[in-house]
Length: 350
Image 1: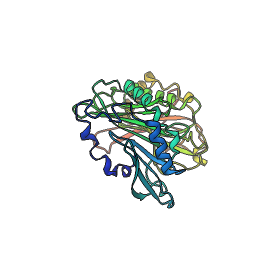
Image 2 (image 1 turned 135 degrees about the horizontal axis):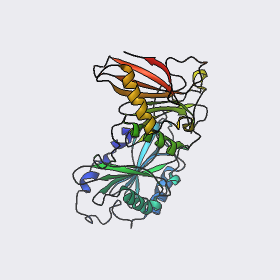
Image 3 (image 1 turned 120 degrees about the vertical axis):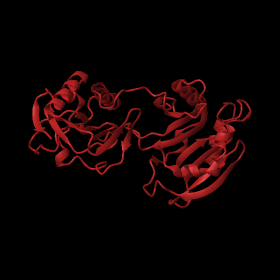
Image 4 (image 1 turned 180 degrees about the vertical axis):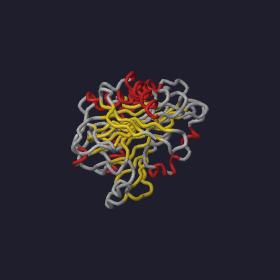
């Protein structure tokens, strides 16, 4: 999820190996115990960086590392390490955020207080709910890929299972769980991505994440993902693109992201407008579309919900769901567009 650049710190290259030792092998292991001076660590780091903003906090087995703005050069960042007693500075690197790179923003060190780590770890362990998993790292950043209305710093507690499965839990500074990413094989099965029940579930996930009043320009669902163009909850009046797959929902970089709601996108809709698209209706539209194509072997490969699909003029204000079906040859396809009552409004056959 995050930019790889902050992971270049040499101090952390041996972290994973340390964690393979038996529990309790290191009495001062910052990941396994809560009896180290967390508040003192934060105070020592704060004294060292002053008012500089922090890009990353990493809790390893034997130190706390941060990347902060350089004291005098805004185009640089500097790494600092607290080893249980003292703070030492490390290498300086380009400030990738200032260069418009990466997927995090800097934040005040005080926004993620270290003395809340016992609560953070306990909440993460309970949320991850895999008893044999070990915490391998705790990372604090302010990710810009989150879909929340307000950007806030988050803790990400990384876990590893015996045998190699990995995952993580995202939490606020107050130990509120905001996302759980389980290892492959532990994730809930959603069924085929374009199955009517799964498409309906995708719409329900949008409602749960953004509420009933969010405004959408387009919802595009193919056989692996959904791409949603909507009014940005962080920047009203602008477009954000949200990417959804079976286990995550993140902000996606696109040509449309950050652009204003322009002349062709000024007719948004809400999920209340598409409430009729439940699993039953979607199954009916799937069957009718395949029958309309008139060719054996056709399957539905895409849904598009919008007021601005290909055949529509700017004056056409109807909200439609366009259902596309095709053969596996990658060339033969057609489409049927339906209004929210299930009536055909446009048909193109192979």
